[in-house]
Amino acid sequence: MRFDVDATRSPDRTTVHLQQFSVAYQYPVYFTEGLFDPGNPVLADALGRLEPDRRHRCLAFVDDGLLEADGELADRIVGYARQHAGRIELVCPPVPVPGGERIKNELFFVEQMQRRLFEHRIDRHAYVIAIGGGAVLDAVGLVAATTHRGVRLIRVPTTVLAQDDSGVGVKSGVNLHGVKNFVGAFAPPFAVLNDLDLLHLLSPRDKVAGMAEAVKVALIRDGAFFTWLERHADDLVTFERAALAQMIRRCAGLHMRQIAHGGDPFETGSARPLDFGHWSAHKLESLTRHHLRHGEAVAIGIALDARYSALAGLLEDGEEERICALLEHLGFRLWHPALDGRRADGRLEVLDGLREFREHLGGELTVTLLDGIGRGVELHEIDEATMLDAIAWLRERDQRP
Ligand SMILES: NC(=O)c1ccc[n+]([C@@H]2O[C@H](COP(=O)([O-])OP(=O)(O)OC[C@H]3O[C@@H](n4cnc5c(N)ncnc54)[C@H](O)[C@@H]3O)[C@@H](O)[C@H]2O)c1
Ligand SMILES: [Zn+2]
Image (cartoon, rainbow, N blue to C red):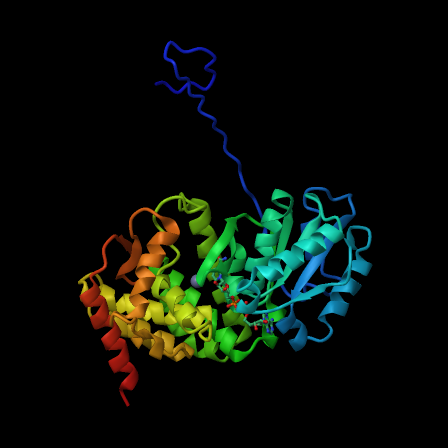
């Protein structure tokens, strides 16, 4: 059989036409302050990037946790649209949606949002603006990716985690059948607008949670950034503005670089290079029914896989302690009783996370571990007895006075 781009006839009984094209994606990621101040041009510019002379129809969904923390936000958004009425038309007042994992745990909310798009005749040239934490962005992202097979999405991430990681990426999704992100899509946004001011209302818990992703990406990609995090840990725990801003920009940049230059932006292979520490984190989130935040679970997952890396002889002895010390300095607890949860047959439940991690991708198991600080390495086999030792080490560390 031969592959022929222009084949019309073939001596064989079968002809194969190899369809082939590539599409270049581009989206700006802004870092700004006072996004909805009437004088800030960022949102209007982002909407008008391709058609600067048009008036753009927009429907905004806003995280209700954020609305609760900032009672004037909805009015500011409406005021901004009024000020820029030549370029922006809000089809209705900003629509509140449930913040946090609630919105991802039921398809009900996805359908409800799609109904809004239907009612307001949002088409492929109109915009959905998602304003919220990672969970809201994931759910609204799925809505935007699937309605009319994809409408334009502007993301306004409002948590540290969403600004430094999830908001700048290409993935969206919600949970189903108890599996994280079981239903989702790869769909790059139209633009991402990070506003540092939106973070100051965030709970201390959520501010800290987002720092886990910075430690993660530093560990697998950028040793100098890890050292920077160690040096600035005191500033980060007090949420000092300049340090927080720098951490977010560097972390977001490393994620963007991996997506653009890692060779597999839509994860068709077996690797999930940015998901260091995540096989156990996703499982812990489900096991705790999301009482652990994503970032908190990732911090535990990082500590676990760092210890495993050391036990497996990849990471120099003692480096895992250094990693745990930074995470603890930032405010993470590196143990949760769910790590000890057992199935009826006596097996630790968290270990099922390895199987689920592989199933999510298909292919062979690929887990990122560390062979140095700043150096991720992919392994295709995990020794369960060694992993149990790593869990025991975390338990024992947690019980130290
Ligand atoms: N798509 C991806 O690539 C990707 C990557 C990492 C994580 N995620 C997902 O992101 C989710 C976690 O996101 P998260 O850590 O941003 O938390 P979150 O979205 O669960 O939000 C945490 C809480 O903060 C509230 N909130 C949001 N912004 C606020 C603000 N500015 N002020 C006050 N309160 C605010 C929310 O209402 C919620 O109660 C998980 O579902 C995770 O799976 C996705
Ligand atoms: Zn993550």
